[in-house]
Structure formats: C-alpha cells, structure tokens
Length: 310
Image (tube, rainbow, N blue to C red; front, side, top):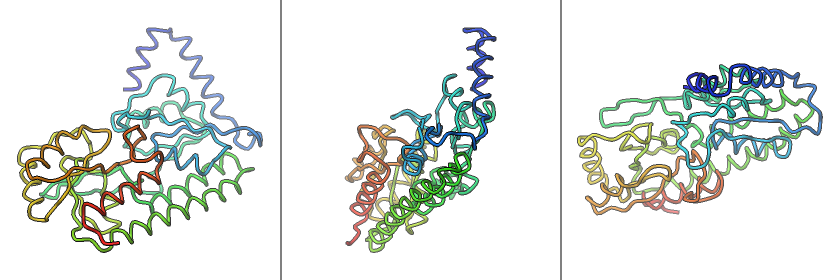
C-alpha cells in the first residue's frame, strides 16, 4: 500500500525530488544517538494513541511525539502519507505494534529509522475467542491490560535511554511514577470487578480479551477483532440467546464505530446500551481526555452493567 503511494508520488513530483527527500531523511535518522545534545528533544514517532501517551509520560519535555493515527481514525485501517513515511525515517525512535497496522510495518521496513521498537517483542500477542464456536483471532489490544502496560512502559523507557543515555535517570524516574499509576489502576479494576452479579459482557468489538482475562470476565463480541466486520444473522441470534440466559443488562459499543447494531440488539431485548472504549484514539465523544480517565470510565461502565458491589 505504501509502495503504491510512493509510485504515485514519483509520477507527481519527480523521482529525483522524492529520492533526495528520503535520502536526507535516512541520513538524519542514522545519527549516532550518543551525539544528541542534552537540550535536544528526541523525535519519537508512534503508531497509535496508547503508546504515544506512554511515551509522553516517560519522556516528558525531552521528547516530541508524533502519533501516526489522527483522532477519530480507525487504527486498523490506517494509510500513511509520504510525509509520515519521511517522519519515520527522520525519527530518533519509532514505536509500533507489528501486525496491528500493516501500513506502519511496511513504512518501518522501508524507511529504516535509526531505532525502532516493536511492542510485541515484550508483550507477545494472544488469541481470543470471538464467537460461540470458539473461533480464535489474534488480539492486538494489549494496552487495555494495565499490567501489560507496565511492561510496555518499562521497555519504552529503556528504548529512550538507548537513544539518549544522558537522560536515562529522568526516563527511569518518570517510568517508575507511571508504573505506580498503572499498578493503582490494576488494583482498582481488581477491586471493582471482584464481586459482581455476572461476569459476562457483550460488546460490538472483540477488543477486550486481555482485560477480560486479567479480571476473570468473559467477553462476548458481536463482531471480530476488526470493528467494522458485519456479524451473520446466526451470530446475532446467538448473542440474543446468551443475553437472555445470562441476564445481560447492557450491550456495549465504542466511540469510533456506529452504535446502530448494538442499539438494534438492545432494543429487541429491552436492554440498555453503553460505551466501552478500546482507547485507540481520543475524540470529543471519548469519556475522558487521556488513557487513565477513559480506563476509569470503562471500569465504571462494567461495574454498572454487571451489578458489581463496591
């Protein structure tokens, strides 16, 4: 996909100009990280919001973070511009999750930034069931588990320190503070979801498998890992039967996908709808302005839907 766009650009702006741009970017990207000045901000390019948030918390004023996925865009379907590919080439560090965003995978391979870090190297992806037959799909949404986020945060801190050794202590201190915040979040989830009338929740998007596993819940997705997948009539009937059997009160949908399907199923059964946010990006519809506040909103929604006692 990226190569096709570059071929188009070659026709539009000329091979010499584009080749010069990419060669310049690559030359800048291969700068010896130890030569970075103590006052120079690190340029970090990140595939999507959760990892951008982590990097900003750890790097603070020492980093400039570029999120390749704009607010409101679906990360799974991301396409990159030529400028974004050049930003990757010029970056001091590019952080991505392999297989989540194929366009980013291709761009990293093509642009060859000085340093790149694949999240799955420290948090291997798992398969989670997406239908009544137990069909499995690889789930990329590791950031919805606060414990895994602590592991990722530690790895990002280490990567920043490799690029800028002079600031290792600052990165480590920021990461330690962040790890405490994530540990408190984990404890809030453990406590809030430990005494509930039901453990099953129904959602339009199979994004919550890691969260469900961590807190002993059962995720029942209407669609698969790709949020725009249309379920079959058989799948909808299965969902309705399960909702009745398990006393489900709420059908969850998310901010980046139309709520029409969730609303239709809920209306048929006289149930409520509510938002369970996969936190792939922040929009004006988000119930919070950053990762922690939206995670808290998700916890509150699950507690209310599943009849959890304080």
